[in-house]
Length: 419
Image (cartoon, rainbow, N blue to C red; front, side):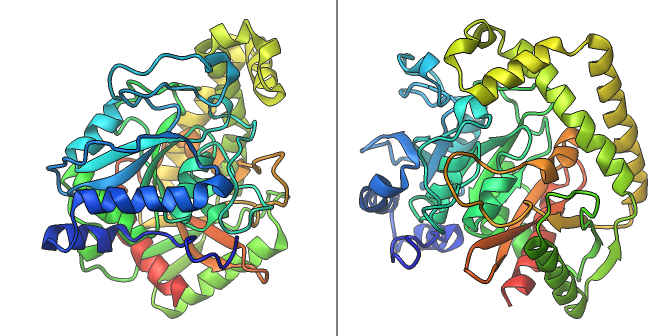
């Protein structure tokens, strides 16, 4: 798969420029997406279903950009199967999820449903990693990450409860945004943990994410705004044994390049705070998942073992332990906000290392748990690779509802890392 000419991300910014200038039409863009899917998806397997002739009409600022939708998000006319055999016979959704409706207003054209792990947890789907077919694409938004990395679509929707956007973006070598929790409604999304679930978005670059975010929200296109070198806190995750030497080296490389380019980079001083958040997150997630997916818990024998274990574990967590975990999150969030007020973002590893070999697991979300517990926006920035060519993503964590500023920082960082 590496070296295959079709496996190149599709620039959103170039496509939108062509659409606005009349050099391309929405019908042309959809035809291109269909050709790319036909040429690559037999091997890639990023899609659950795609409409061979979706409505290309789009009046929003994106002007008709093809869009993939993770298969836990309702898309009118297609079933939401959530990667589980429990919903193999699901009826087509009768209406779009709120987030799909928002993207349609922005000029996106949903063309189908991308693969998810079972109910957005750990059981792998069939998707392969475009960077190397023998390595996991991550989870749970594996189909969306792979579809963007392979150039099948320039944008795809995901969701994150632990590390389901950040990790696959890092493994597949694309950019991704995890939105601040609550920034957009979750109506029409089959969630797992109400206080943790967040929307996500994949694109080729941070610049593309900035353009898409501007189209979605009406806020300025951060990649076109003039800004100075950022002030960053570098989090090396020193207390996380799962972080591999190659990733620690990548963070060092990123830090040195950013400093040389003029960024102010100071060391993140609060590893114990992150450790407490990392421990609290799975308690909150399991407790809420057992109640959110109570119907599925009653049929746990028909679920994948990872999901069945999560639900059973959550059912056994007491109300007192859950509330204690929620208090930990609230107190740690207050402390982090006070500590980071003078900085533009926290920079750290997006995953423990490159995508692990094999397709039987989706990798470890440990480096996302703390930030997801806080509901902060996160951008995965591509640009670094290991000696074998596998992508090594870094993440930038911003302030709640500070997506525009964070995307401006991410664009600056990405330009430096790409050199």
